[in-house]
Structures are given as structure tokens and as C-alpha cells.
Amino acid sequence: MPASYTPKTRGSETSDKKTSSQTLDTNMSAARATVGDVLANKNGDLFWINPQDTVAKAVEVLRDKGIGALLVKNPQGELVGILSERDIVRRLADTPGETLPQTVEGLMSTDVITATPDQSVVEVLRLMTDGRFRHMPVLEQEQLVGMITIGDVVNFRLTALEYEALQLKQLIVG
Image 1 (tube, rainbow, N blue to C red):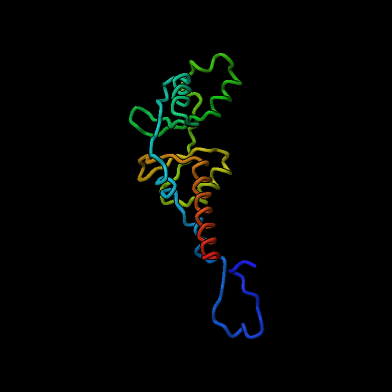
Image 2: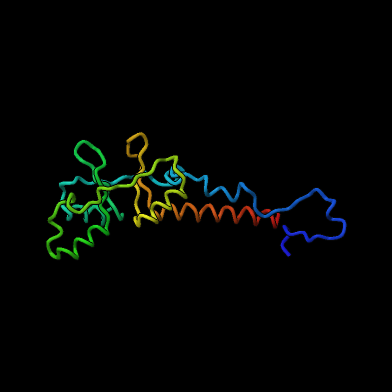
């Protein structure tokens, strides 16, 4: 039997010592993690394109930077959309051989859902899953401070689970 389990035996009911493998703190740690925590683990590089740039230019940036989406900012620096690989693939299917010269403005998603650094990771993951998108810009006081992906969120949670498992293992063995 694991060391954390103590079977009830005659006389053990009088002991005040309780054991548990989980606490409210460990169970709620995922719910308390924020977008800011996820951003702290990223390098902070942001890539964007102008709405009037061509899809060909966007494809080159996506390829060269190894990313799956680009923020779209107007000349004043305001976020006006997001362009993902999915947007491009759909247009390629609709206009084969005619897509690359088109402007980003015609393909980008303009209803961009954003997050804030203090928003919970669980809430953002739910928004991404329900909305079926994988990239979310992060704004703080109307200023762009980062972008997180569903992969960032999953990786953050897996790292936290590995750390929690290591702590439990040390409690059991140690």
C-alpha cells in the first residue's frame, strides 16, 4: 500500500493525525493560474501584419517565424484582426491559384476575442474550445501585451501537473 494510506485499525479513531493525498490548494491551483502566468513562460515575441499586405507576405511571415497566426494591426497600431493558417487554407479552397495576391483584410477574422493577464487559464481554455480557435491576443488597458495559444495553455497545465506529481511522489517516498 502507498505510504499515504493508513487503514483504520482498532484504536486509530482516537488519533488526531489525518492524512490526505489532495488538498483544496492542490485541487484549486489550476483554477487560480492566470494568462499572465502563461505569458511569463513565453519569450514575448509578437508578430503582426498590416491589413493591406498581401496573403503572400503573410504566408512568408508565418513560415519564417514558425507560427500559426498573425495579429493584424492598422497603421495607427490598433489591433483590427487576426489571420490564421486556417483562414488562408479556407480561402485557398475557395479561390485556388488566386489567393496569394489578395489582401489580408479580406481574409482576417475581425471578431477577435481577447484575454487579459489576470484572466484565469481555465476560462480562456473554455473560450478557445467553445469558439474553436487556437490563438488569443492578450490586452492590458487596451495595449497588446502578448498572444497565447491553446498549446501554451495545455503545456502550462501539463508542466503544473508534472510538478504536482513530483511533489506527491516526494511526500510518499520522503
